Each structure stands twice: as C-alpha cells, then as structure tokens.
Picture (tube, one colour):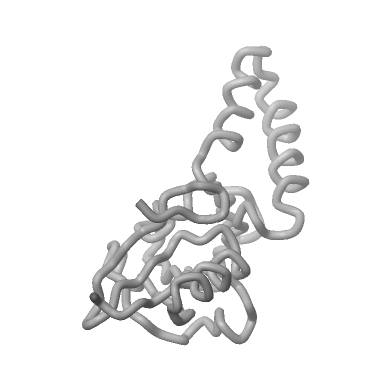
Length: 157
C-alpha cells in the first residue's frame, strides 16, 4: 500500500499505460514521491461526478504548485484543510454555530467532533455562506464539481 507524507492511503489508478497515484497531502509530498519513484507529476481531473480520473492541465496545478482544487462554479468555494486560514475559519464556524444553536455542551462537542474527524476535511461555502463540511474524496461527487488533484504517474511494469 502506498501512503502520503501523513501515512494516509494514496489512491491508485491505471490509466492507459501508466499507474497514477493521487491523494497527496501537499505539492511537495507529490514531488518527493515522484523523485523517489522516478515518476512524473501530473494533474488528474475528476470531472464527471464519479471517480473516473483523466490526466489534464485545466486547473494549472503544476504551474501553481497546488495539490488540490475544486471548480464548482462561481457560487461555490471549497476550502481544503491545508489551505491557509482553514483552522481559523473552522474554529469561527464552530463558535457561530454553537452560539446560534444555543446547544448543550454535548451537542457542541459532537459538532466540533465533525470537522475534526472528517478525513482530509473540506469546508464548502455557497454564496459566501457556510454550507457543509465534506472530505476530499466525497468532493468528487458533490455539486457537479470538477475536482483536480496532483498525481504521480509511473509507467506500468
């Protein structure tokens, strides 16, 4: 099993005559993997609402040195857990939600638990308002989103 820098499982796909890995924790993580394995960095797009990857360069991840990007139209913004300010944004959302809900201690605890325990969490904003928390994997299936990830391509043995 291949893993990223945080020992999380990488996704493995067979495309044409190559094996492509995605799920890297950051651009440098993918670069290090490519160097170690003699692979090539590629941008992988999931554009049909399923887990059907395509090699592309539509989002410009290589040029921008990004590892993940979602395009779900102008009304949506996806904030990845590695994005600057994610933690501050998540903390503020939890405070606002707890104050609005006037929730009991137990309810607030479990609301906080949600963001903390979603694997590779993504905050979804619609029209500048919080909508939901999801995972990187689940974002491929939401809102007819086009999800782009950095990948490492290796020739098939």
